[in-house]
Image (cartoon, rainbow over all chains, first blue to last red; front, top):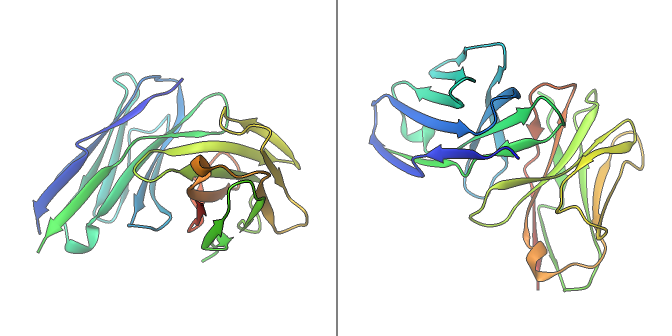
Length: 112
Length: 112
């Protein structure tokens, strides 16, 4: 069974700083990996999806990378803003099956 | 932009009662999912649904749970006899094919 881990569990940075969130998965046979944002008490907003054949995806200030061989993905946020404060989740879909396996998330606070 | 909608946003029920959670997936999507998130824990997969049948389910999705697509737009999750431990946020998601999943805002279920 796929196990997904996110480190750190919480992160606090001053506004303007660049930061990296980490996601590790145990089984490299993934189909794709998706990063989400979750605001308190809210649903999940899709940020980026990386297919297994891709190394990275970019959207605005966000860049996600994928290294299947090492079982890692990172989410890079450039020039952080207070509005980026939220919990960030990664989820991996395996080659077999339809379900995503979620990590426990990283709670990000950007201090003005 | 199309989005997944869920009703109700909050449901309070007594232990042993039946509840039905409703979702309207994005109209041209083909795969539908239910997930749950117990407070402070990971998002957990419950079930996936394709072509009017369950395509995959987790260990959590026991005989107390059922899903249905009663018409061309709604997708429902029924819990026959709720338990205290069913209290959680329930998320519906949909995807066109094996691409990124789009999540609804969730239904908070409180079992008393």
